[in-house]
Image (cartoon, rainbow, N blue to C red):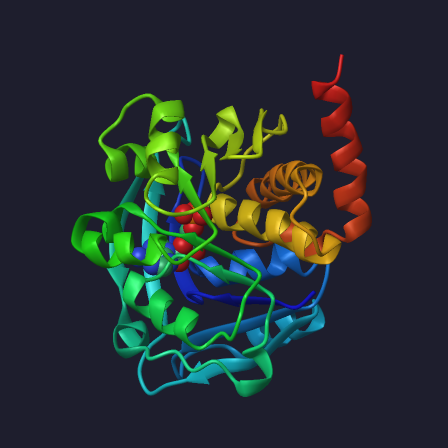
Length: 299
Ligand code: AMP
């Protein structure tokens, strides 16, 4: 089934306790696409500036991502910079430069409007809603967001949540959105806001999926050495949606398996800087680690 993502392509400056790197290829839609493309072709809608390196688009094309929906605008590409504490769980955003993203008015190419599976990756809820308006009858729309948008565009985000099938949130975002500390209760409250499914990501503590017909919880895959957690959430969503779109149905078992593939994808992401490790991974690698994860959680 066709899978469309809209979100950011970015150049990130990332600081960990071990290293600092500038202008690392990133963005919410980047991580999602690279992970999902291990399963099936992905259609990408985003905006980049004149400074965007042509080789970075080629990398996506080679992975099976259709970049014909990427707009080239006058100005600089979206930039984000962040710093991690030694425990990886605390991230400080140092700076967000919207640049060409500030005036982004997404245009979904006509060939992509019939997409069945739609992921609205982290972006302003207004941009996400404009994209959703242009897709004919998506069978499964999932949205991601972040603390910034919950703070500054709450009404727009709540309006969007009423129109989508699923939402992915990390623990901090779920608490911020609902005001509830207990994550199970927070997930129930989010379901009351509209979506049929909520996926709650808890970083190294794993993730759970809640919906009326499914409740599933998983630990993270135990990674030997974390190099850079940037993009792990988007990558999780890419593994999940890539698998589910490939399966082409929303059976509870498919969604559960999607959670395992999301977990596997995120584990590959954090093992390298940016997409260094993730971009090398094939469906076969995903399957190998899927089996390992399964053996870890089954008695
Ligand atoms: P994650 O670690 O999964 O939260 O994703 C990190 C990625 O999100 C980075 O590559 C950033 O470029 C991108 N990002 C950071 N802030 C925003 C924002 N406000 N809107 C969209 N994407 C963002």
